[in-house]
Length: 103
Image 1 (cartoon, helix red, strand yellow):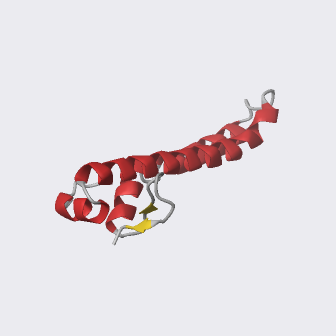
Image 2: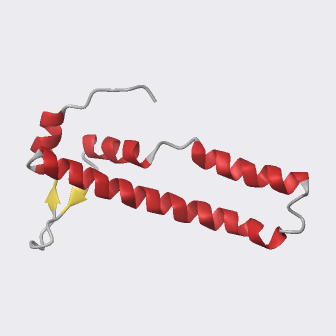
């Protein structure tokens, strides 16, 4: 991924302050990472019953293929930043019950 400059003023305007924008993006990044990990664990759980047969080259290749597929995906932080810039993230304050859109 090439390095790109973020417009921090726009992010701060969306969330109120830059600090709030960073907090929202970090929480979203953790959600994305958790979802990806659960999905990967679910796919790799298929291979758990084959410990004796894991030496089979084909099974090892399939397991490696699944792992490499997830390594090529964008990082959770990158996904969270992109979602924030595209106004796809919604958040609300715990004290308030109403959602606050980011645009």
